[in-house]
Image (cartoon, rainbow, N blue to C red; front, side, top):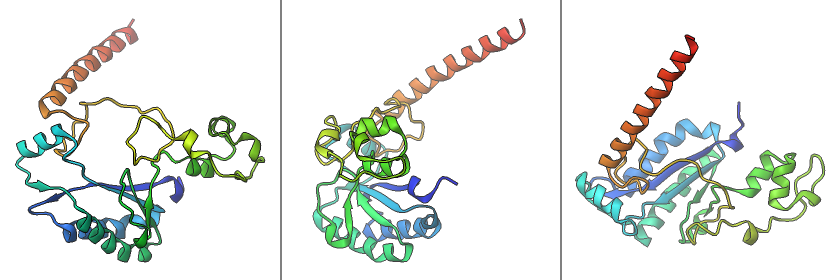
Length: 216
């Protein structure tokens, strides 16, 4: 209903542990890919950055997960295995915020907030065209005749390897109840539970007020 170009399959972060190796990750990707490939054009993945996030290290250790970082050989091994799966699905693959060059496997660098994709699916949105600086380069049903100025559009507040254009994020740290141990958005399960309890209490109060108002 949406169109394959509007559905991006994300499989990240890839995490290595004593019980989970590169071959295991590829087997998981293959199992999901066999089901999802008719509905998407792209797979986006990244390698877990554990050393750079002290809270992630702490939460993994508290959960008893014996992890280790991806090194270059492991990254290349995963990319090589993935490159053998992609042709049968007719989809492309890209990395998210990764500096390593995997182009020899047909894997590029992704832009999760992708100006070119936005133009492709919303080419008649005047506000979008103006924001991207291409309003004078398009007709009523044509794509831009010149490329986007990526340097101008890049989100300067992101990591160096991130290619996203500037955007406004929505959401709040320390509120996701899934409590994945490798997630950098949660400091601790205890803080998340505390926040969720406060949100729940406020929500109940709002519902009560609305109920009372409806009876007046």
